[in-house]
Length: 136
Image 1 (tube, rainbow, N blue to C red):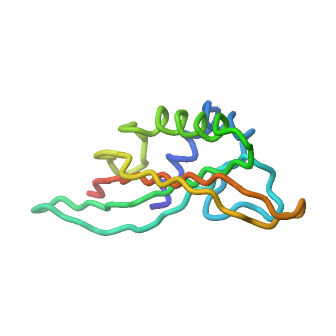
Image 2 (tube, rainbow, N blue to C red):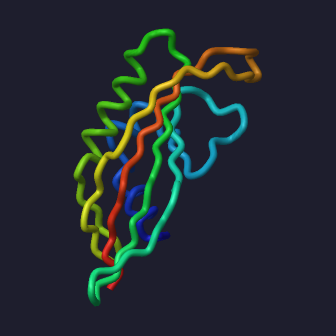
């Protein structure tokens, strides 16, 4: 799984999506007092699978996009660039083979959070991708 995460980080580097958030892309958790917009991605689940003698790992990755802009333009641009970068993409994974990287779900929400600037409404788009990796 470490190699899959490294491949995702490499794909993000220098991308339009990374530019959208000024490089604020974090694994697992954003730092306290993080400036908006930003992205957090993490492993939701990882399940071993096999077919005859071939072994696979089915991993669900979630990208959480956060924006405090009143307008939807910022977060919808982030979503467009995420989809452009990762929908059915190829990834170079050391010692394993990516079978597919497919978007599974998008959930949109507005959350009220407390920051150092006070309470504010934040747009949060949660986008799930399934990565199927052959591990043999």
